Image 1: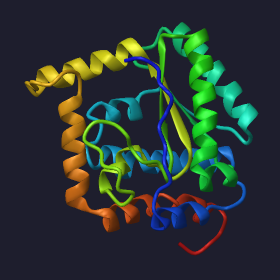
Image 2 (image 1 turned 45 degrees about the vertical axis):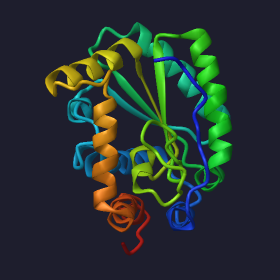
Image 3 (image 1 turned 120 degrees about the vertical axis):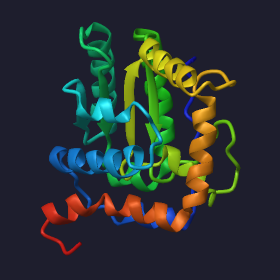
Image 4 (image 1 turned 60 degrees about the vertical axis):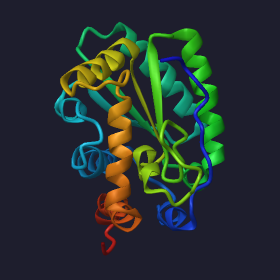
Length: 226
């Protein structure tokens, strides 16, 4: 899979309302808690990524939080270098940027991700980056241009997040999934199609609630009512 500029678009105001409810400051502890809930309650619970559970339970999973675009970029460059040098199997790093500007403005996050992807591609081409955002619209296979298509939740998270992982391991995981499921399509294309059908069957209302529930750690840590 080649590096490419991450495609984003502005989502519906219903999704925007989730992003604008975020507190002004989310520290690393809060960001980690929220991200783990998102992985557990959306990605793993809905079976969107068959190998997510192993990554979730692995000691090689790292979740970092950055408080500025500069520190976010620096963290991505450092993480990509560590991934290349790591002797562990399937190491994964998630980097979260909980600044309100990037939570509410998807285009700001899109531009930042594009810059990071270019830099990582030059320095460490063995590393792939996947981006998630509460307002992101998926432009991949089987997606529609409609902002209210539930399939877009395959690339949505509560906080702006990038995932870094080694390309060869990602491709191997996709190959294994396709072989196990006897998919006639290359890579995990069948999985992507299945995910979109599953998300559309669940519907926006329930998916928004799942994503919103991931905020509970923030509310509890700040002493707010859920």
